[in-house]
Amino acid sequence: MSDAQASLVAIASLALALALFAGWRAHRRTRRADPDAVGWIDWTLVQMAALIALAVSGYVALRG
Image (cartoon, rainbow, N blue to C red):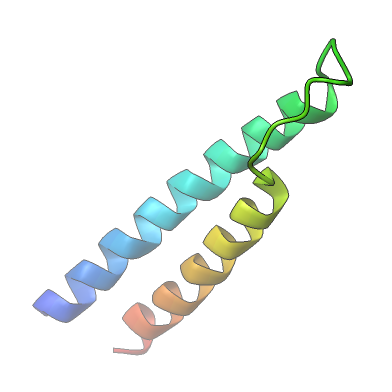
């Protein structure tokens, strides 16, 4: 595995971790006790961006 592939795998791993974290936060946001306590981060958008980054970096890393 080359250095470029290793860094792409690291990016994909971080994107996966971010997507999982954002999914957990979005789940908590939908089930919050106070519906008026609105957060300032749209976790669904963060999750989608992380999943796109995961898909692109994973594809490029596996393609070689």
